[in-house]
Image 1: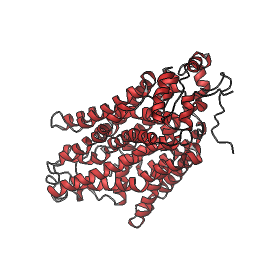
Image 2 (image 1 turned 45 degrees about the vertical axis):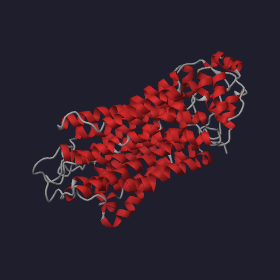
Image 3 (image 1 turned 90 degrees about the vertical axis):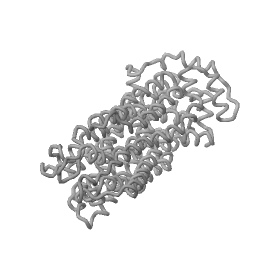
Image 4 (image 1 turned 120 degrees about the vertical axis):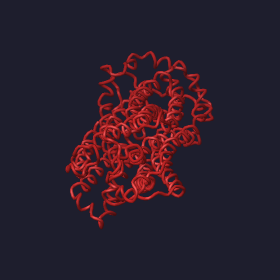
Length: 534
């Protein structure tokens, strides 16, 4: 049987949408804007790095990063992100959301700048420096996932909580687009100032010395939006749910939220003390009691995020190769180094503009209308359909007259990733676990996702190679080809449909109702069904 909720938490649950909600979305969202910019901008410059540092005199094609270097450069930030999600997620439950929130931002600012610097000019030194700082950049980015989601969900009202949390995540779309647009501007400016012949015409002169500045500038600019929001983050009050339910300070929680909501709130310290003394609420993370209450939920959030990110990040990392196959990006030898950056950036920006950004905001619009479960199921279903539709008649799509159809299908897979599990896997873990484990469990779920991203990032660099060893990129063994890789991704998405049945629906419910924190005893846990009852 449910008890009366603390007044301060009830006030947050029933609050009308106010200016502080939008302030929180912007402050948390700018972190995600930076996260996406930093994570995805590397795919814009990997070809350029190959041309600059791995040029081979007399080679028919421009230099490319060796397989191990390419895997490290593309994947090392994911390793850092995974570590950061686990560490800062745990720290957010131990020290409080606010205290840790500023730390992650400073790490991101410093490492964004440092990733554009190098110790020495030799390829090994440049790549080692880049990988070192991108690992720690990822570490800071990782912290942003559990903290931003938890803070936004704990500030939001229950009627529009899904929209607010997904709006924070939706800023990723603008970050990806901003990375592409900035790369277009920089490459255009450098191309105008330092024109160069195509590689086929003059291999050595096709990569001007100034091209070395292009990738550094693109990576370093990621520090600017993060630095701009540092002051705002430092001024945010701690969330009432952490202060009251974890720190057990009802007076401070009431005081903070009285200022935020601009209303009088009674502290209710006695009720907080009573809640903290209840043995049924004293179980620890991964205890038998935790596993019986939340074990399947945690399996659901970790597995679906893992499967989603295998598909999502493998697409992003080899989309430039798909664009080459369908002719959006001409053969490398027909361009100079800076022109290649421009063409890759243009393709990524068009995909972001046409499918990634709209997909995120469709989720924001509908998540509190049709629910998390329906959106996630629909997203995985259509991703599966479109992956198979791309893969089975793959040769049909590579013909010049069918290119536009391919791009539309490819865009739709991105659209339904973002109007689907890419957003919902971020939202749900911030809603269904108790306050004292919320940040940790979100971090575990997100880290599982990044493990999937690493499988996609590392695995598909090799898998997407042609089965014909004469057609593979330099240094890569033969793979299974793009067509078979897309079939594998279709199967992965289908598994996502099955594991979604483990994830409960949280639409319209308070956080305490979802986590069972406002129940009288351990036998009256709220019935968190996966599929809403009609």
